Amino acid sequence: DYYKFLRIQDAFKALHLHVNLIGVIVELDFPTASDCSCTLKIVDPWHSESGLSVKFVARALPRVESVGDIILLSRVKIVLINRKITALCNETSSSTFALFNGKHGVDFIPYQSSPKFMIREQDHNLLSNLRECLTSLKDIKEGECSNLSCLIVHISKVYKDRWYIYVWDGTEMPPCNISVKLERLPLCVEPEMLPTYMLRKFPTFGSVLRVIVERVSQKQAIHCLQPGQHVKLLNLFFQVNMGLWNATFTPSTKMQYTMNREMLAFSPQSFRMCGEKFSSRWNPITRCISRSHSGGVAHEDAPFVTLMDILTYHKVTAKFRCVVRFIQVYPRDVRKLRDSNGNIRLLAILEDATARIHASLYANEGEKFFGCEQSDEEAIVKKLNKLLGGEEMEQVPRNPPWVQCCLI
Image 1 (spheres, one colour):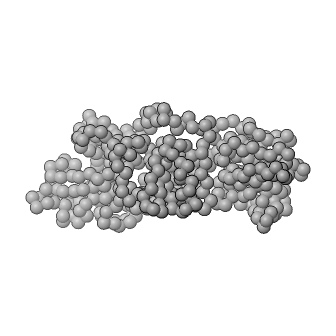
Image 2: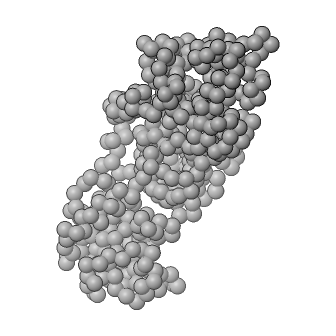
Image 3: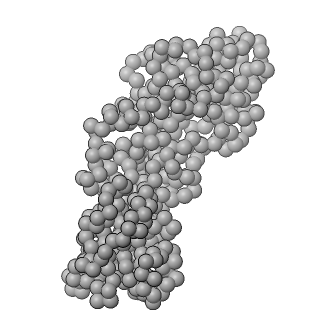
C-alpha cells in the first residue's frame, strides 16, 4: 500500500518487502565515492533502542543537515546486508526520500528530496508527531528512554571514572515520591553540592538535570563539550534515586550539537526573558499549596523566590518566601523534638524544582510555624506528618504537599 507507513519495529519483520517509513535520524556516515552510497540510522516513537539502518544507493545522496532531522522514505526494500536488517533506498527501483527540519513548529517543505517525491496532506500529521519526539524535562518518566534538547550548564569530574553533565531546558522536572527510608536524604545527586560561585552560573528557574557518565567510550565525547552549548541527547535513560532525578547514557545514546538555527531560544540574552516568562510558576496561587500552611505566613512583603535564588544570594541575611516541599525532618524520633530547655529544635530538608536545602526551626519560631502551643506535642506531630505527606514520619512512599513558608 503506497499510502501506508510502517512502524520501524514492524519493518524488521518485513524482509524482502517494499515499505514506506518515516523516522528521526540519529546516526549517519559519510558517503563513499566509489559506489555512490551512504548509510544512516532512524528511530520512531515505537522503536528508539538500536534504530533501523537505511542504505542509499543513488547519484543524489541525502545531505542531512542535522542529526534529529526527519526523513520520509517511500518504496524502500527491507533486505539483509552483512546479516543486518536494512532498508535499501535505491533510485533504480523507484525508491524516494525527503528530508525535513526536525525542529517543532516549522513548515512541511523538505529541504532535500528525490525528484519524484510528492508530499501529501496526510503526511503533515506524521511529521508533526515526530517533531514532538523531543521530550522536555517536565515530561520525563522514570525508567524510560527519551530524547532531550537542552543547554549544558556545567560539567564536572567527581571521581576518576565518573563525570556529571548538568543540563537545563527551562522546564521543571516532575516532583518525586519519597520511597526510601534513610537516616538522611542527600541534597543533590552528586556526592557534594557544588560551591556557591559555580551555582551562581546556574539558572535560578527550572530544573537542572544531572547526567551521569561512567563508560570510557562516553567520557571521550565530554572533552568536546562546553557550558553554554545547546545539544540534543538522543535515547537518554531517566531514573530516580532517593527522590532525585538523574539520567545515564545507554549504548545507543547519541549526542549532537544543535545547529545555529536552533540556538536563539537558548542564547544568554534570552535568559532574562525566559526568567520573566517562568516567574509566574513561583506565584503561590499557581501552586498546589497545603491549606494548613497557605495563610498567615510571616513577612508577607518578602519576595517569592526559588531555592536556587536563596543558595546563590550575595547577601548574608535576607527574608524570602518560597513554595516548597518538606522532604525530611530531624530528629525523626518525636520524643527528641525538644532540647533540654523544652524548645522545639528541628532541621528540615526543603525541596523545590531548582534545589534542595537544609532549614532549621527553633524555639518560638516553631510555635509560629506550626500555629499551636509548644506543649501540644500531638498537634505538632500531626502537622509534621501532614507536611511530610504521610500518616507517620517514617512512612514510605510519601508524596509531600507544596507549602508556602518564609525563610530567613
